[in-house]
Image 1 (cartoon, each protein chain N blue to C red):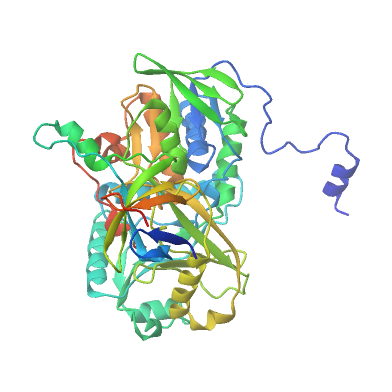
Image 2: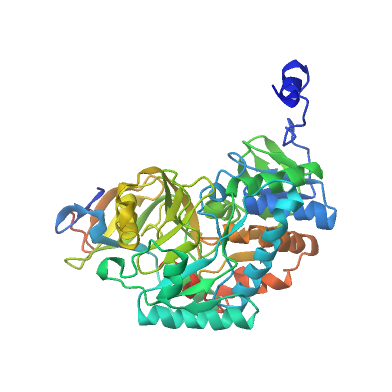
Length: 413
Length: 86
């Protein structure tokens, strides 16, 4: 028996510290209260403590850490977006991602695979060219490649896709990566916890107190907390929180479903996305194929999944990889995607003083976890938006100045 | 398969229907402010609840209203604009 294990057996006290401190009581007041213990909320807490020295911070989580969209996405990280605002923002995020495992001393299974967005039509090829040129202008590795490039990277693919959607080319993004999503929440959470931030799970927000248009406190299921700054990072639950403040936003909730296959030997190295076939697929470190499709077609605020989804996605996957007809699906689930009209997030200040919004993360939130945490921490501290997020303000809709990111949504949503 | 009741064609698979969002009152574009108009154009009630929505049965192009619990995704009632129910 390893000596380390023996220590656990004979020690009366737990010989190693727990990953998180369990706090039994809420304090009467905090400098900053963060609603939502997902990747975004915990990252903001982490950077508030690490970069700005603000540690009197409390993260309130209704369920458990990383149990929302942080644990429900398909873990793809990329920066080949369409708008200059989006490209610069997600590029900063990809750069932060690359160092996170070392920074946390926790293996995030960050794995750079290369990301292909397949084009099956002339119009899709045109959009790929547009994205490649915008990306290259901002120094991001992104290029339009032919079908033979795709075949080399993934020899099992049927380039004709069953004959009805032949692959004409693809946008290839070499830095495209995947990471273990739960570990991201744990890494940020532990880093924040070690620096003095309190994480309170099983604590729901019941109301937000304001006085003269300024935040004064938060009512929770475990009592009242006084605070002047609240950061809301709750993705699919955003409208439930903004409703407490009578704050109007364009956010609508649609379920986004995903599923995984049984584990297989490694055969699929790159991440493949097809807008026409409504599919994205990669192989995880465990060997499972992680697959997603487009949004559910209408508003629903729950995380139920459907058989229609599995049937539709499987049919399209077989167009690309006919040999998978014997593969079994082992899990499926859904997350609540907080969609915006222009497919860009809503970040920054709001008309309520001291209430900051990190929302509108729709189907693109996971990859933004590090940079959203960093920029929102800056925004909360300075009470002014970080330069990288000025294009994502809630006010943009009132000015009709949308940040049209729709062309970069890899799958037709 | 989830079913929805079209006021004209009866119960049909939900995949035949398209949701066009919550029924909302349009402000008078000539009289309202830019801010009121932007609010109408962009903002939505995204919180869960029982909502009255416009739906269309696409094969027959039948437009109708549906009352739906958006958290449980349960359709409570469907009717035509003139008030006729299935």
